[in-house]
Length: 279
Length: 342
Image (tube, one colour):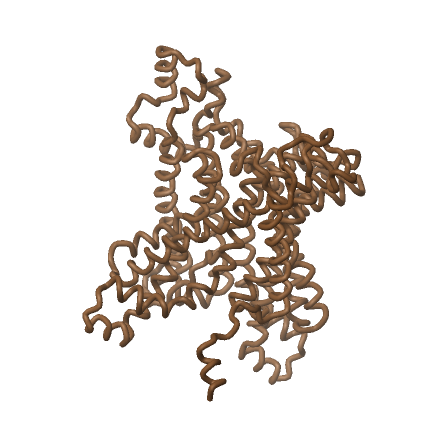
């Protein structure tokens, strides 16, 4: 009886991935994201030159130096949080606006509807990366435009899913009861409908975050996002490419690339597991 | 990305036009409409930034009269909707306009002459990638589906999973480290002289190609595996087996054929992906293609080139989408009967 009650009160550990691949992903994510978020507190100065450009690894700089002679390890430790932060921000904005628009469209069944459909059509008609480049052209280069563009790309799809879920829910008895009780529209949406569509909502948060990370890292790599002298894994890969030869310091490129690789593999595995993809 | 929208079942219209043709025409019209909306957005996006193209050309030391003259030459003194109309009519006649940098050098080169050769370089790379991806993922996907749950399935699924989760430039970097830094057998950049075909220097194509194939093949195998498994579990396959038809024949004649339709959609998705993936890969290996060109144009704020190249890519993208859907209907006539005339 009591255990029954506890089981009902304490939800199943939904954050714990059900598949082995998902658990591997979780461990990898904790490791890479941990390094990215905690790293800045331990790193030396990422902006100071410590040795000649592209010095190979030695005692002072365990991963050697980059094209300006800066410590690669210090930059590696400071360069990870930007991806996570900006990708997280973009995903958050996409969901915040997407949920609002989707709820309004589904509950009020009015003008946002055709607009949503058409905007998805337009966004599907060219590559996301090209869309971000266009955004950067319109609003100036820099991470602000990139985050905004990444959010805008994902927004219509989120809004459409929420809209459909809202439409289904608002025909249910409990919603009608709430309306008859005299609850206001905003209260019906917030207190009745929203709690019942969280499942639909959370299904692909992981995959969307993955998508944000990929896009933002790629734009940083293209040099159209975060600008030097910021330390960022994507940017580090592109600015140190001249050092790829054995005689120089390939680690300046390889280290940030591998960290990004681990991060994206991790969130992919976890995202798959979370969206219930029983492969 | 859920690119494809399944045709809705509807009533049949008894008109003498082939249903697939009707469907194709309708899709082309819808696609043209989408592109038209897009052209407005693209035009606005490349026009809103403060300081117009003329001052970008002349730089900070632009004097009043010179600026006015150039603005007139570029048509920037016209109202914005006239500029849009001129640009759009130009596009429809195959004229991509003049790039900002051509005004800078004073040479009268069109965007097309700058971009044409690069487009064909990109098409070469994309076609080669496609030619590798299709057979590899088809063979892999079918094999894995037939051995579902056994070790072949686990090995292939795991091995292809990792590269397909990576951003293109990360996989590219790893390949560079192996084949350039470590083994020193391939060049780190794929510079191709203007006017020469990339096919004349096959070693320059290997790394860009491997990168594109690496990031796509895993997902393709997974999707084809799923389609094949669906087909193998279908009633008609069970019936065929119960009728005593030999298993190889069941696989080939019954399952494979029906798994082909979703596979075409997978390949369409990949073709579409390549349009965007080329951007990163070309930039990474300094390959002179249309994607790299677009990145450079954005970098130097060449807005007239950005807008025309963007529309060009979007048109290719939409065309691929429509083409794929039409081919699917041709391969699976059943779909045409329910959906084509809806």
